[in-house]
Length: 339
Image (tube, rainbow, N blue to C red; front, side, top):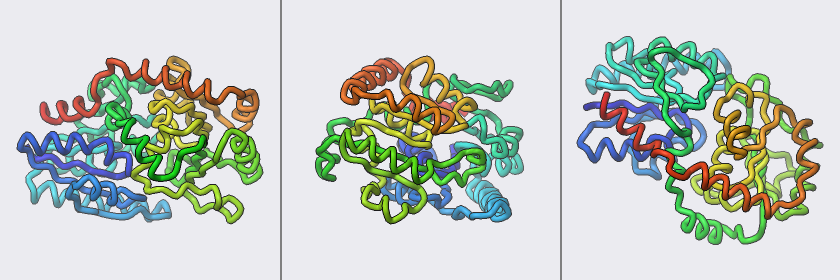
């Protein structure tokens, strides 16, 4: 079988890397195409995955639409030239239409209910739409559920011993907390507001009482916050998240990663009620603390006192959640192999 896998985001590299290796080991041809968003290409190279970069993100809405048409053109070209049998991606916006146009199957993996424009474009042309069982929307006969989360595809067998060695090599030997600030340039972030400077100062001041503070920010930090900037190879972020006392931020993906790694995670985003993963991890499993606004966050966070105790409790919850859960990476590979 000849499979095209599209990688549009750094997290997609983690999600598909084991699947790609499995397919190749079983003798199938895998063609990987990428979008040069942040460190996507660097991660592919680190994983020794051959790829063809089709585009880089553009800033304006018109630029994004032009980029999409460029990607469609190149993917159609690759499908026809390589005689691809199946196109696979997360979101499906780049692969579902080219697959439909050329008469082949496409599988779209998604866990983002509020990616409205992407979903409107991708879902009608997708052969199957694969979602976690927590997904809030029913999508009809095309929908396939699996018991897990995207993040489990690369965190289920996380090597904690190696992570500890990485932290020691990086100098993360004292208690510390992580603040994550996203740039909100994605279409589904249209109603998201960043933590303002006054709020960031206050958060740093509070967390500093409990240890060091490191800020991971998609946008450049102002001079007064530069001393807190997290300067590590981004490929080692999961090792650092696992060792943190606390995670506070507005990135759903990194908040979920932190919680699954046993780190107390506080997520602030108006998107929360639209995302099934966030709703269930908060209410059913107590693995996330979710807030719609920073005002709601401050009301609850001011009561926090026992940080070490909370870290231990979170690790227990994480272990309970992960226990006996089916392998997501194996599910993805099996689904493609059975196409």
